[in-house]
Amino acid sequence: MRPPTLRPSPRRRRRSAPAALALAALTLALTTAPATASPSAPTGHCAGLAHLRVPGAAHQRTACLDELTTAGTVASGHTDPADWAGLTPKDLAVPSGVPGIQIDGYFPDTSTTNTNHGWNHDAQFVLRLPDRWNGGLVVAGTPGNREQYANDRAIADWVLAQGYAYAATDKGNTGLAFHRDGKTPGDAIAEWNDRLTQLTRAARATLAQRYHRPPARTLVTGMSNGGYLVRWQLENHPELYDGGVDWEGTLWRADGPTLLDFLPRAMRAYPVYAAGGEGAEAAREEMHAAGFPAGSEFLWPYHHKVYWDLTQRIYREELDPGYDGAVEAGTPYCAPGTPGCDADYDYAARPDEVRRAVEKIALTGRIGKPLLTLHGTLDALLPIGRDSDVYARMVRDAGRGPLHRYYRIEGGTHTDSLVDAFPDRLRPLTPCHRTAFAALEDWLTAGHRPPASGTVALPGGQDPATLANACSLDTEKDAATRP
Image (tube, rainbow, N blue to C red; front, top):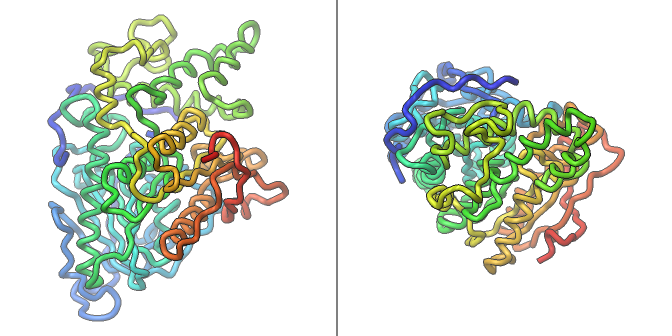
C-alpha cells in the first residue's frame, strides 16, 4: 500500500485538552443508521437509554442495537470496517447475539484529525453496554494511528460475547500526521495516555448509571500502540484497573531501545540485502543485529514497502522534529547520505532534548496490577528482542515479576492478516490474546495462576481455521522469560 502524501501544516499546534503501529487503515466517514428501538424505552432491552450521560463528553449519540458485535454493527453503521482492516485473519469466527446500547461521542479537544460521523473532532470514543452484563468493563486504546473502532473485530467482539461492557478511544489524534498535535515534541503520544485514563473514568461512571452499580472489575488491553497504553496505565494508574493484557506493546525508553534505534538500521541494510550480490550477506547480518530475527526474511519486503520507512519518519517527527529542519516527516525512501535522511538517523547522537521528549512517554516496568504480555517471535515491525523481551526484564528489575506473565508466541508476527498470505509459516495472535484474557480472568477471580512465562510453540499439523480460533498458552521456559 502506498502511503498518502502529508499536507503542509504548522509543525506544532496547541496541545489538545487533558494532560502506528499498524498504519494501513485510514479515515473513512461513518454514516450512523437509525436506532433499532426507541430511546425512551422504559424497561427491558435498552432500559434507561435516554438518561445515560458520559461524564465530561462534549457530545454523544446513543443508540439501542439488536447486535453490538461486528455481526450487526457493520450493517447498522455502528463500526468502521476500514478502521480494523488488516488486523485479523480471515478465518476468525465472529460471535453474535449481543443486544445492548452503543454510545458514540467525543470529549473536548482542539484537534480535528478524526472525521468519523462527520464530526471532524478528535478524542472520539465508543462505549458498548450489553443487556446481559457480566459485571466487568474492558477499555482499550487503538493500534497504530487508527480510530476508535480499530479493535472491534480483534477484541471488542469477543469480550462483548463474554458479557463485558467495552470502551475504546481514538487516543486524541489519528492518521499519519498525528504528530502535528501538541505544543512540544512528545505531546501527541502523551495525550494517548491521558485519553485512555479519561475514558476509563468516564466509562466506569456510565456503567454505574446503566446497571446501578460500578463494574466489579476493569481490565485494560490493546495491541501495538494500544499495548503500550496498557503498560503505561498499569504503571501510572493501577488504581483504575484490576489487570491487563498487553499485545505486542510498543516500547519507549529514553535510553533505548526504541523503534528510533532499530528502524534506521533496517532502512539502511535492507535495500543492500534485497539487491543481492556483494554485500547482501553482510546486510542480512546487520538486519539480524538490529533485532530482526533470523527466519523473518520472508516478511522483510512487505515491511520495507509498508512500515519501516513511514513509521520511522512520523514517529521521529513527533519526538525529534528538528532533525530534518523545515521538512515535515522527512523524505520517503531517501538514500543514505541525503541531508536529513531518516535512514541515517542516530538516536544516541541526538541532543538531550530528544531524550527528554521520549522520557515524557517512557515506560519503567513498575506495574501495579497483574499484566499478561504476548508477542510474536517473527514480529518484523517491533522485533521481540528489542521490545517485549526488554520490557519483561524491566518488570523483573523493578521487582514486579510476580505480577507479570510473558508469552513469546512462536510464528506470530505484528499483524494477523499476514497469516493469510503465509499460512504455512505464521500463526495469528488473536486467539492467543483471547486465551491470555481468559487466564487473566481466572487469575483475578479464582486465584489460579496463569501458565509460566515462556515460549508457546507453533503447533504442527493444524489447519488455518483451527489456528485462527484456538491457542494454548502451554510454554517452554527460556532465558528471555525466566523469572
